[in-house]
Image (cartoon, rainbow, N blue to C red; front, side, top):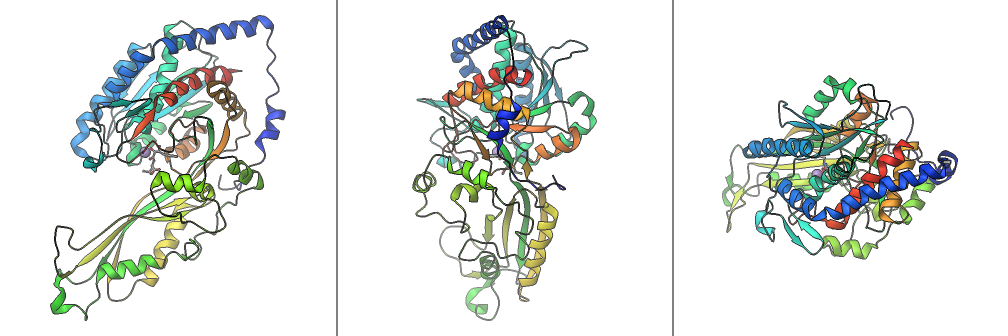
Length: 490
Ligand code: BES
Ligand code: MN
């Protein structure tokens, strides 16, 4: 990734070259179809029970960021272990320095010659706050029409549970599963996956696999199932501007002393120009450009800017000039203020000059940007433009490279075939705007690429109040998983 520059070729051309039809005899074709039908019938017949189980999974308040929920994470992991065992998987709970990791393996021959795939997911969820904005409590799942509302429903419990159910269908119908699978479901994705990296290193041999299958991203619509081939990276940090040694009377001192909140606003205000470009010198230096092919693929995405505006409730979109909103959201780096705090936040007014002001910031990164290089440039610039009237304190947070894998490989082609079969329409290739930092470790430690088969929809409210998962995505996701193992084994 570092050495070779990321640029997508035209995978649809390669598709013809690469996936020369697998030649099966008529008998073999019929046998395969019969097998698939058994699995698909099982899935169809058992949806009501799957829903009940899914709701049980969602009732655990497995909020990894909040220490008060430590027991809920443990209980959720234990539930997954028991459930996995119940459906015929060989499961184990691995304690870590943080929240436990669930491992679930399909039964396999001692010296199995079948290809081995890892299925990655996470059972931890984002904090549900602000609670008052939920239409029903976040950990009391509620079904409305074809949607299931609960924290963690789309990110990520519903998505990993769909794979669990597909594998159950194979195991419970006694259908030959042509791949060996190891589920790795962690409890710390939303807080940086620190202990999973350790786990990967210590269990490297056991986790050696062809590729990692991950459903923890999205698709543009049910008619546009997608194979993701890129994720953005990230750097996180906090800056605090310190002013007077305590809050001051703004009447007594105002006018003669800098206000840290104002200084911070001005400092941050300089970092973006009117064309939406980040003004930090060198910020865009290593950004991989989009190929003509990729831009064309982007133009196949459904939805208009006015629909997007409506979905997120803004008067008008804003982004870097020269790029479409889809490109801005996934192929361009950003500088975002995630939180801004200073002074009095309570009711009514309070006439003070606050002693300090703080901003929580993350930058999304794209292929070929090195997180530590970008971090250095950003922080150097902040130090340079910080006025002498305040003291700048910087606290560094986590960082991860972007991920990019060519969608022309044989695994990607198999995934595209499975998507088409499961959803009944032609899949598209997407770059994802979010980050899953552990995918880089899968590549570095295990040498395995990740197949991003996201089942979330744009209006799922991931990380927001009223998170939901579409039951159509849940069902089609199960079918996708069922087909995938056949296609990957071809
Ligand atoms: N499922 C998301 C990642 C995601 C969402 C990728 C949508 C692509 C599209 C994941 O659970 C997540 O939220 N990741 C964090 C990582 C961060 C805390 C380092 C993110 O992207 O903010
Ligand atoms: Mn998330």
